[in-house]
Amino acid sequence: MTETVVITGASAGIARATARLYGERGANVGLIARGQAGLDGAAHDVEEAGGKALAVSADVADYGQVEDAARQVEDFFGPIDVWINVAFSSVFAPFADVSAEEFRRVTEVSYLGFVHGTMVALHRMRARDRGTIVQVGSALGARSIPLQSAYCGAKHAVNGFTSSLRCELLHEHSGVRVTVVQMPAVNTPQFSWVRSKLPNHPQPVPPIYQPEVAARGVVFAADHPGRKQYWVGASTAATILANRVVPALLDRYLARTGFDSQQTAQEAEPGRPDNLWAPVDGSAGHDHGARGIFDDRSHDRSAQLWMSQHAGLVTGAAAGSAILGGVLAARLARAR
Image (cartoon, one colour):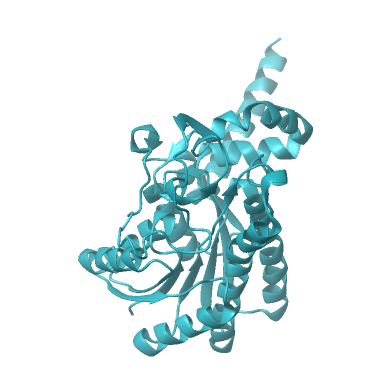
């Protein structure tokens, strides 16, 4: 049976790479984004890979547009099996330099966009008692950093409402599953079109991963939605775990390093366009693709992703090592 998958923010980045992977599986892929050039490019990627695509221009901040997009996908392909929320926006600036309108817009896209997507998907999936919703999160949803207060707040909120929803679905003994994939810094075009008030060009905090690595994590999570979370990238694991143990130390560390690490040495281009209110590939007709400008600094593999996908094996190996260590220690003690 052919899967029908909906992906928001599908014109670029992680969502674009994920759409291509589903195309390789021969899936029916509903693509939602604002930029027409990027949507057309994503549809071409899916169909070139072997799948079928339907591109729908919609702003996820508008619930009505998301609902209409879902209806178009189901009219065209049939029932939606997997819904993947990825679309987001951000403003790179100290909180004091972010206007109320900018903060609200980031929240509407990066948080309420996930809520809207989840609502329209759940409305359909609950009636059928099946389906999977994947939230593409971030390590910044567990550990905030400076200069991205609106985005970090939104990612924390996504984790919060998703946990609440998961409890409700468990209470109902529902066949619908929801999971979150927490991401590291990824080489996407967002750093070339995000609204920024920084003196230099914004960049992801190294280490940086290619969007194809992230996409493999998303597809795996959709196939195995029984787990609450998946982590992609060693930096994601290190960030989340360190924040559990030494959050105050991380505050001081990020206060020292968090400003410079999010900027390159290149001065920002004055008046460069950004996609906060409108897509940058609209009138220009430019398709940015999945990857950003940091190819030469990005990893195309993640050992942490493999460990996340094989958690049972890793846990078993760790337990076995602990038992073996205990036996050897006991024998050594008796020998002494």
